[in-house]
Length: 136
Image (cartoon, rainbow, N blue to C red):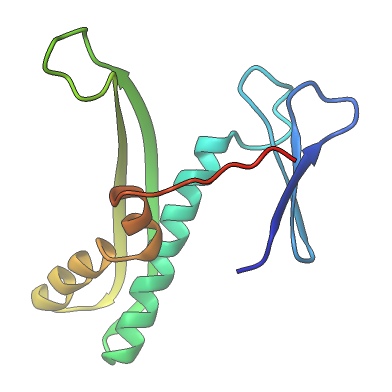
């Protein structure tokens, strides 16, 4: 995986320029000037893109007649009422709706739904992750 570099955008209070190899894009915060999608919009976009690519690769390998995949996602974060037995104070929820276009059997569609749960970004979001931070 290539290194991702994030740096400030001149003249913008919150906007950040992201560079990945030859690619560049802007991330902004809702409180910013809307110079780009916010971080959570990119997060769910990564999930949607990974889901679609994974389904297309699997269908091609299994010779399924999958012509197109579209994924619609929404992200919500709800605060949990204070309670003694809560393990978290927030519940993060991503709703993912997958539309499959092609001559697929009910069995094909069910298998593709199972495969969607296995895309790499889905697994990263649902499994334990470790983030190691170093101040330079």
